[in-house]
Length: 545
Image 1 (cartoon, one colour):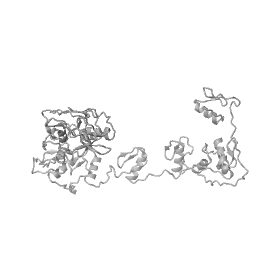
Image 2 (tube, one colour):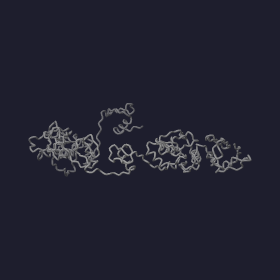
Image 3 (cartoon, one colour):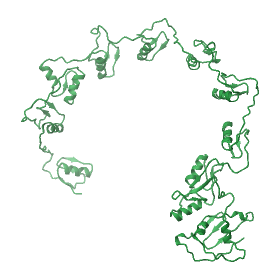
Image 4 (cartoon, one colour):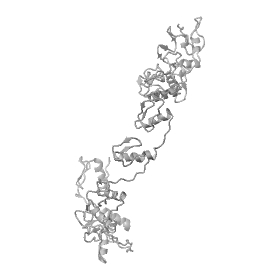
């Protein structure tokens, strides 16, 4: 059947609402603005048309032209493809999915109609390259998770559906819609293969769970008991069911099988007569009929499996350990320890034996050498890593400190040393605060806090003192800059800038020299920016860019 060519009529629709003159190809169907040529194969019937109204508009029994002017509604309807090609498009009243515009939330039946809606309503043109065959609709129930529109294969169903949502603008109403076929899966399939969904499962449990939730099948489990008159042993160590003649992978699965199939309950822990002997030399549990490889694993089993309170086992309980054993060997337990500290902790926690402290009554006879260069403590028979650690060890363990025994004016000289030098440690501290803390913390000196004495307001320190010594505060600074900052902050002095000393003060600087050389300072600079900054701040010469 071939429709007659339609005559052109003056349109009452705006130019922006006219359909595009560009041909749209979908399978074997071609639509243009001026003519419509529809070919239907003999296998297709008249039901392949979706809209009966369009059939009436395009066909006439008297072979006469259509005199009805097109309306806006008919033009909008003509934008959607009105032909259902078998295998390409689902039914228009489907319940599984649809296409939705993310801007105005308008629903469409096909992806092409949604793309046209984007172009006409929102002026958005599709420029993607992932959808290679726009005329093909993807099948959301494809067993191979293959998108024929994009020619892409996905590994799992979740990734496939995510692709449909993001790339194809598809809204999937439900993912558990049963495929429209009349094939009923076999619940006793040995390969766990669902012939309705064309999918295999890893185990019987997953397969039957799929049948219950997806196909709504009521599966009655009928266990095949080879020995129906015999109940399995709840405490069987091999997880073997003698009634079903089947061995399970774990005791948990075995006992779950006993509860569900054989309707058994946990008989509880064995009676006291069946409890194992924790001192069994063969490490054999008579309650569980299990032999362990080591004594530790066997006693662990007795403690946590049978809830037994165990008494510590000693190889030689009547022997007294030697606390000064050089090998750190405990004779009671028959164990050797890696260090002296771990040996002492073992004696204290297990055997309640306290190790003697390192203080000795006659400390003067074996007192350690305070200034030993090897950092060796003769009392502890121990060598420290550094002098600082050695002195800290003497102070904290043996209460041996280096006290400065000075009296009268000599003590004041020590505390107020202008160089902040400790003549015992042969060490110079950077500031008076650190020097006083050193005397208090290291040498245990009782120093009175510094008092701010009333000073004559007319006495000021010399700002050009070469030793950076403040005669008012009796402090020495590290540098000229810190000394001058002290004079400004503490004594409110207003100081003139120090005259700069140049190597060649009378030489004129050539600012255009390519090697960035300052003739006055006899210095070379590596970059023009640094050279210009030097001229600006040191020589007060502004260099124009």
